[in-house]
Structure formats: structure tokens, C-alpha cells
Image (cartoon, rainbow, N blue to C red; front, side, top):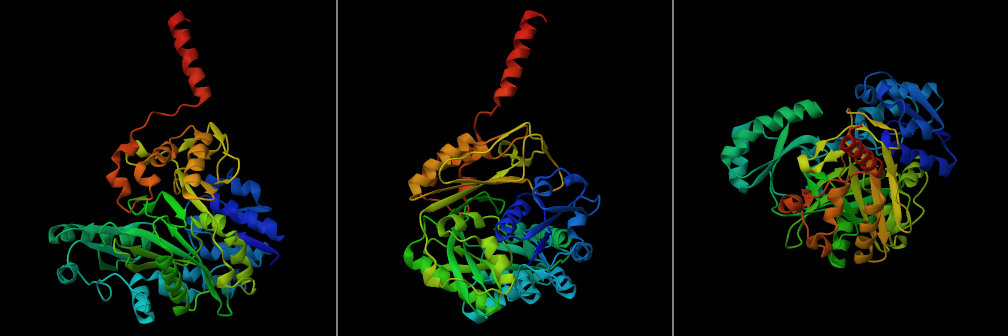
Length: 471
């Protein structure tokens, strides 16, 4: 490959630009009016305007593929979000003789359809959560399935993802109320109204396994990540390896993930997600057929650059290592720095970054899409940076996280930084005791003093002095 068009924006686009630079490959960014001054536009070797529409332009598969051909690109990296799990986009790239840096359209379709994925995993011997055999036709069928498997249940959009199109229902009345809402959300967000039902695993741990597979049948896993700390099914903190998983279960999850990838003839990077109950039983939840936001923690503990591996695999290279060659060292923790107000139910907070200070020192990595003076547009996901720390042991990683969260500074908008500072002081977190109910069970974490930049504080003091003096 000589030039890759990055069909994405923000932090992940910057990440791919860096991988291309290290591989000696030119990078081409795309941007809308809202992203004219974005960091990925500044960092890429080339950048092309794709239209004024802030969101639709990034979803125009034909236009993006045409642009890639017109600008001499021979490959496209979709990142995550937008068109990353769009089988039609992968097919369009193939027709235009562009290498799609991801799995085949067939694999995307099979694993993107949640009911088809469940069926495939069952046939492969991978345990799945009890639920409906396929999509449910209406609320009456949904009630019948729920009665058979028992409440609580999870009502899910068949084409869902990113925490959308999911509702927990504790009884028949709630199921009747939530059913039309999930159907509506599925239709608006994914263009399909199909939903299915699964048994709700109470207080599970959300554990996912990173896999890499080449086109020659070689598949390896890069161990697991613990993504249990989340709100509204969207992850806040990710950890590798999980401090709650013993070696036996770790090996079992790795084997299941490799089996899942082989079952669909998977190629490139992917993530197999599981729910693990209090007894250590693991159930397949879904497979994300793309790069994950939290790939960073796996890179830190294994030393493997997952984005570069994606590019090499798509270019026809064999995996350069076997399963026994993959070693894990230490612990890594990723904190999603979102432009949100945790005190106000994580309401998005957009505006101008008046000051930005990136942390540094040993074992600290920051993947960001912001800089001082950058205006955060209101049209996209609220994540603006990812803070990643690594240390040889769990306590060392937590201590480093505390220091790095004190060092990082994002001013001008509200962020999740002070919330993360509270998390790393929480006894349950320190002891590695957490599941998907962590945020709900610790409402006190959202009670913290406001963080004011030195410049803003100086201005406030100056204004107070002037007012007192009658100036």
C-alpha cells in the first residue's frame, strides 16, 4: 500500500495517520465544514473536503470510495463508527479495487446481525445467553419468550451497537412499554426495526477478547479487556488484563474467541464480547468487526500495534507471530475523556477548548483529537481524548492513573476527568471489584468540586478585586 484514505475523523483518524507514518504509507484525511480545523486534518499528509453536512458526508460510501480512487489511494481504513461495520461500503471498495482494511462483507453481515451471530455461535459451540431463536415479530411474541426464559430480560435491536437499542425489562408491563421504544430507536439509528430478546444476566462483568486473523487461516487472541465500568451500556473505563479473571477463565475466553473468529472465516482485527456471571460462566454477546476504541490497553500490555497489524493483514501479509509468541506484561487502564457533564447525567458539553495540557511521564499515553483553541462541534460523539496508563502491577497502574488524571487539563468545557479521578479513589475499584452496575451503585462519584483553570481563576480574582474597588 502506498496511500490510505481514512474514512473517519477525530482521535481515531489521528491514530491511523500515525500508524501510516511509521509504515511509510501516505495518509489522506477527509473532513466536513465542521471539521475544517480538526487535528486529523492537520496531521494527515493530505486532506480533502467532502461536503458541508456534518454527519451525512462521513456516511456517503460511494462518494468516499470515489474520492479515494480519484486521489490515488489504494486502500481505505474505516476506523470505528460511521462506515466501519457497513458491509455495503466494504463491497463498494472491492468493486473500485480499493483494499478495505477490515473483514470481508460476509463476516460483517453475519456478525452485525445479532440473531444470525447467535445462531452461528451456537453452531460453533460457543455458549450464548438464553433468548429468542430469532427476531420477535411483535410484543405478544416477546412476552411469550420472556415468560419462557424468565425475567429480567434484555430487549435488543438486531442491528444495534454502541449501547443503543437496548432496554432491560423486569416484568411484563415494562416489556410492553419498552417494546415500541426499542423498535423506534432501532429504526431511526440502524434503519431496521427488528428486535430480539435475551435473558438478562444480573450483575455481569463485560469481558471482551481481541483477535487478529490473516487470510491464510491463522487466528490468535491478544487476551482480554475488562469493560464493565460503563453507563447506559457505553464504556467509560477499560482495563487489560481484567483484574477479576483467573488464568483458567482467561484461557477459556481466548479459546472461545478464536473459535468464534474461525466460525465466520474472519480476517483482520476483531473483538469478541462476553458477559461473565458471578459463577464464572461466559456467554457470547456480540462480535465487533472493526477496531475498538479500547484497543490501546491491549497494545500497552502486549506490545503489538493493532492498527499496523490491520494494515499488514489487509495487504496480504501473514501474522508474524503464533499464539505462544503473544505475551502479556503488566496492567493498562484507559479512561475515555468525554466532553460531558457527569453531574448532569453526562449531558454533552460542547464549545471551545481554552486550555489543554497533555500528561506525560513513564507509562502514560494520550490519544487526543483536541488542542488549545479547538472548537468541539456538537454533531459527533462526545469523546475527545483517551488517557491510557501502564504499570507492572495493578496497584502501580492505579497510582499512575491518579497522577496522570491530575496532570491532564482540559478547560473551557466540562469533561469526565474529575469523575475518573473519583473512580480511581473508590475502594471497590482499587480492589478490582466492579461489574456493569458499578456506576449506578456509586452515585457519590458524581459529587466533586468544580475544576477551574489557573487563567479562569486569575480572571475571577481580578474581577472581584475590581468590583470591590469600584473600578
